[in-house]
Image (cartoon, rainbow, N blue to C red; front, side, top):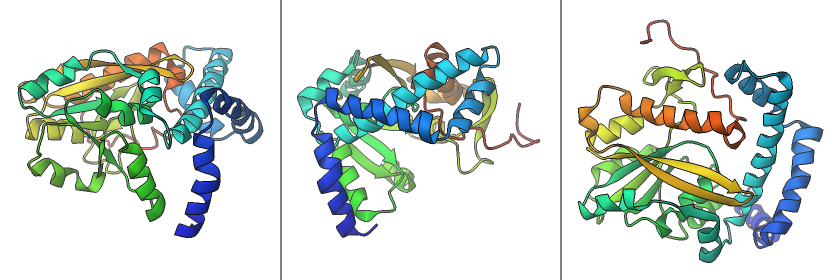
Length: 295
């Protein structure tokens, strides 16, 4: 899509949709659910397969119930993502509350940057956009650049509207190596499927052999940054709370891979409590554990 068509789509569809009140957006979400789940069946085989593998003890009826709740939540996320293009500070403060930002902010007094680790759970996009309203650190989001340059610029402006800094994932090391004018809080997503399996860490997650990107632990150890887990919980439709939990303030003192395993187990516990808030549409377990990997 060229820049002209991108502008037309954004101006005539995305922006007007984002300015609708939340109650009307959720009517669209209800309609979208009927299309995506019942009519099109968007990635339903993938979702069913993932749920069945991860929860073998659950009946078929229980799996379908989780599946339907997930798709309703997923459709809400789609419309909430549109809303982020024009959401006000007042609205996002009401809908994304940080319970204990002092866990983060206490490190600013020490002049220490931190790493915030989490997963695709709750509404991670709203969490990232709102973060700078609560943190005294300079919030930093690592992201994969979009193929469309025009939408790439709009996305960066939207995600950074309250001060969040966007850093392309290819420039992660360069960013960490550069002196920063103030302590930073860099957000790492832990649960995406890694592109480089050989350099990943293998562990059991939701009962499955799972490759986990080692970058979070590598950067924590190399740059001696505390690691904090961000738990995003859905209070009710359109309202979320984030609670922070310190994983370690001394990464070098812990055994190899214990940081990422601790974070993944915290995420796993949240998923087991309310599985429908996790992103089940991705093929998380498409890679197989190499025979020579550590058990």
